[in-house]
Image (cartoon, rainbow, N blue to C red):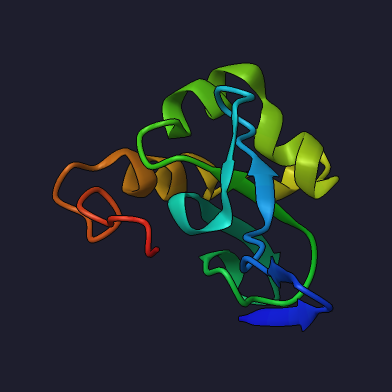
Amino acid sequence: MSRTIGRVVAHYARRVPIRTCVGCRNRDQQDALLRVAWGPSGFVISRTAPGRGAWMHPGCGGLAWRRRAVPRALRLGSADVAGLKDVLAQVDSPASAWANHAPSE
């Protein structure tokens, strides 16, 4: 999209949201990260699930588990983390759909 202001043409680029991975603590575009959220049915991997979420790169699930970063980001108690390790293993799994996900332009 461009706009002409006198003789100057201003170009507006689409801004992509930047998120921080809770595993490696690196910042990246939202398209390159996964979001783990806590819902009524347990943990959900979804970018659009309601509530607090923890963003992470595919493959950073093990590091996020060792740092205890996901329960802290989701503000969960120690009793609520029962299925979290399984969900993080799903994030790290090379056979998952997330492992081959390429960020969109």
